[in-house]
Length: 272
Image (cartoon, rainbow, N blue to C red; front, side):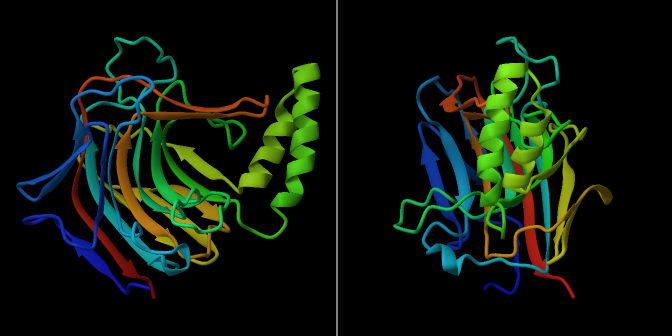
C-alpha cells in the first residue's frame, strides 16, 4: 500500500497515473491544473477522460485503505443538474463525474467480478437514477459511500427481489428501497456546492466511519465504510445508469457539448 501521495500537477502528469481517453476525452496539464475534458459527446458512444492509480494493478494490490485523509481542490465547467432538470438546452453537467476511491468492480484484467465499493464525491445527471438510499434523489452531486462487499449483504438480494415484485403490484416501493440500501450498504448526501467554483473536498476514511467535508464543513458521516483496498480515480464521462426499487436497471450514454472537470491538487495521507 502507498503511504502518502501529493500531486499539484506541476509539469506533465506523473507516471503514477494511468490515463484513459476514450471517444474524444482529453487530459491536459496547464498552469498546474489538470484539465479533463471533451469537446462533445454523442449518445450511443462512450466518452471518457480519466486518471487513476490502479489501472495496471490487480485488485488485491490497490494502493489505499483506511485510515487515511484525502483532499482534492476541484471545479467543473457546468453546474449540477437541479431537481427539475430535464430539458436538453439546460446548462448543466451531463453524464457522470467525480473523484475518490473505488474497487473498479468490472475489471477487465481477469480479476473476479465484485459488487461495488466506493468512498467518493460522485455526480450523475438525468436520466441517471441510482436510487440507493430512500429519500435521496437518484442523481445529483453527492458525497457517497457504497459498501456492498460485506458480511450479510447478499442475503438482502432475495428480500429485495420479493419487495420489488410487491412494489410493482401495489405501487408501494418503500420496502424495496430499504432492501436496496441494505444490499448496497449505501450512505449518501446531496451537496449544494456550486460545481463551477473552486472548493476543497475531503474524506477522512477510517475503519469504522468515513467523514466527508466541503471547505471544512462536514456533509456526510457514514458508518461502516469499505475496508478492502481501493484505488483513486477522477473522471468525466457521458454515461448514465438506472437502478431503482421498481426493478428498473439499465445503462447508456448521453449527448453533450463541451465539458470539463479541473483538479488543482490531490493529496492522500495516513491518519493517526
